Image 1 (cartoon, rainbow, N blue to C red):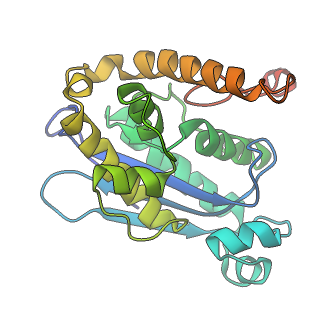
Image 2 (image 1 turned 90 degrees about the vertical axis):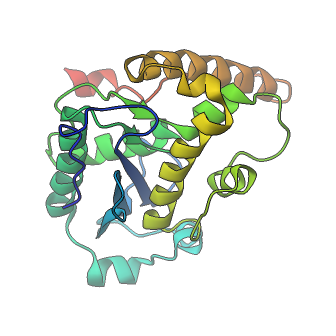
Length: 245
């Protein structure tokens, strides 16, 4: 199991240890998607990153369009994947442990990945992060805030190319997690105003920035679709009311 011990050095930004998370799923709706693969990458110090991966049998068919993206078919998931009830506690424990040490959790487009993981844990009665999700570093939010008017795509591979950080291959959970961590290290060096932010303030700032970015995207989409809505929740979409009762 990957761990990052922030207790020995104290959590810092942007030079301290980080734990990056990535998930590959069955679909784009975080309320319905199931996880078929996940990875965490522990980054810190001078040692090589420590990575842990999970291949999971989601218990449902993996749509062809999803398999075409991440390469995991229903047959592979059924043959080699672990039951969610076994894998999810390990993933949740890795996150909780890092956060309990004050180690930042790096998640690219956090509201999707963290919401999917939280809903999966709820489906299988697995406790999910028994503390606030803080601090979280979302390179997608930080990039948009620091360079909001830049044209072009802002996918993970596109940001890696723009900031000249290595990406070993998209839609591979280990490589995506490592790429997100490299972006989290690189962004405050390209944009010093980010490096000046105290680690304790990062979540509050990103929540505000994510809400502004969502409002801007929603206004743009409503030029062609008056009913378009974009969630402003960050770093995770709250569970529906009935799940909280």
